[in-house]
Length: 507
Ligand code: NAD
Image (tube, rainbow, N blue to C red):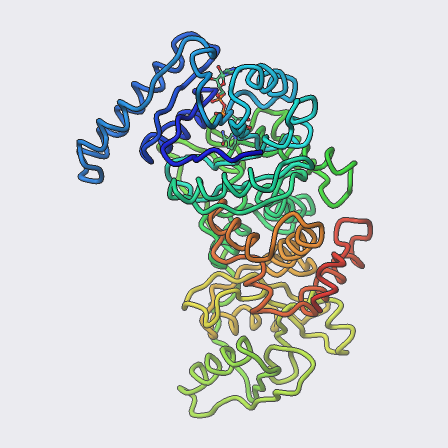
């Protein structure tokens, strides 16, 4: 196929809803003449009026020159019939998420536009290969997956189906760049990159809630302390449980009911009960003007941390951080910790007790394998060195003494954390979630869905993760991540925690 020159080429956007309006704005601001079509009468004109008001708002705030706003608005032409767009070089479709509707729309378009016009779909979950099936020239159909809100979100997944012409994908990649976006190539597979790799962020929290390991506010606090902008419960409340559940179900079904992606009973019960999150006033949290934020449980750390002898175990940045923190904590008493860099575990030996960084084993298992009753396990600090007051989950072995139950929290507090007690679940919260995100990303790369760099950019720009999965992996280790996954696998059995061969290859 001869590639059209897309610079300043006329564009048709079909569907003037949330996404279509945003795409029309971005294209018009990049200098394209944009024809906007929607089957609902008046929808395209309404979208243009709204968009003009948005741009005026930016002008009023001094964020956009008045002339640029006026020129962008003037470039948008709502059209009453799709036939008025026969001469465009690119179509971006953003209509309802239904395969039959998208297929028949593209068939209609194919008969209308010129042979070199590129056809792009903004579908978030339908196979690009399937949408192209039945077209005379399926090679010119490509996914151009924007994120909501389109003018603000930088990521565009450029999705190739089985028959997508590589030059067509390359051309949309370049165009996305010209529109100020960061494009990432993706292969058409369920969830593409972001909606696939992000599944465990919700799923692990839902699994912990199902077994009553902690309250939503605790899980949110732990993951926000790890750098995530919103906790999974807050985020599901924002997205809407109906939407989040539908995406989870579609990824699950599209993967032939692979148990790795199985949706959660916790979420289905909420959807069935109409507890949809912010939009219904209640989800995990109550929403409304006068509703106070939920209180976090207070760990038993009010008592002073005491010891006669402290040894910091392990090598690496987390052990170094613990040594610095223990040195500071003990300085007031005029002594400092010893260090055992060659130890097989990371953490603190505090007299006869052990405060251990999670390797996926529960405190109970660690206690048994170390033949020590007073054991507590703490979650993986993702940001090292940790900011003082960072929330961190911990669990105490059931066989521990009452005194150690108090001291474990007291010691974590003395080391500068805000300890949050959790049930004795393998991998606690952050280690477990991040291990699963890394595993999913490794699997996506193994299957050629994206490159490691693509996965990192997509997760940082599409869902605002503080780092990409391969960046976490570089700071941790493939063997460490696999150890956590294998403990989860042993603990729960089933397919959910199976290690990706892609991750094993990296170990
Ligand atoms: P929306 O409901 O806000 O808008 C869809 C618009 O398409 C409506 O105005 C509707 O009248 C119009 N429409 C329906 N059938 C049509 C047809 N045959 N021809 C022309 N117009 C038609 O939906 P949205 O949220 O903007 O989503 C649109 C697409 O973008 C979907 O495929 C969706 O999966 C995808 N998407 C949505 C988001 C999101 O966060 N909302 C993010 C990424 C991708």
